Image (cartoon, rainbow, N blue to C red):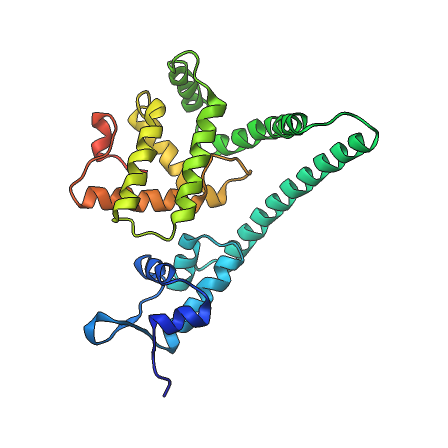
Length: 270
């Protein structure tokens, strides 16, 4: 009989941190045994599940997809794999486009053109601006009707003059990067709740003008980021979105509140 391993031994054998193992447990991906004194112990079954989690995560699956797969609730395994292949193909297209841009820049440098860092950054941003609107249109066309999109445009016209969209997007990327660096993190912890406050403060320009229907539609769209037909960049990953959703739900479960208009009190929080 194989003796269960304590969390320290599992961490040493897998290279995962104690925090990562506890995070996977909090997400329901693994359920270690509890020994005397509340110590965690992993039997053969949980070690096999843990190895599956690591393998699927390495293949690019999100934690939500991994949870559905291990729970047996995702019967269409072929569809799941096909969706992941499509996502990898999109990423490959992005890498190919990035390489093409750099090859073009390199050829211009080789011809003696004065390309400096500022010019390189400008060329990269120009390439992104050409692709990003098309990608967002493909995504929003799936989740919003023409009438709803017209309402969006009307509401967004209420955003104050001088709003810097590029700077706003940079703030989302910066916040997302800090959340990614902190994960895995207990959604109910003080650091997680601080991220919730930052998230909804940053959402203020939208939550001030959004209607309940607009909010619900947007939540639905982001809940399905893994199935988007094109690679649009909202400034954060699907895992960061789900983490904020869990942390916001933990806030509500503890009787706390978040920033937002009155109607948001009964709405999905993320």
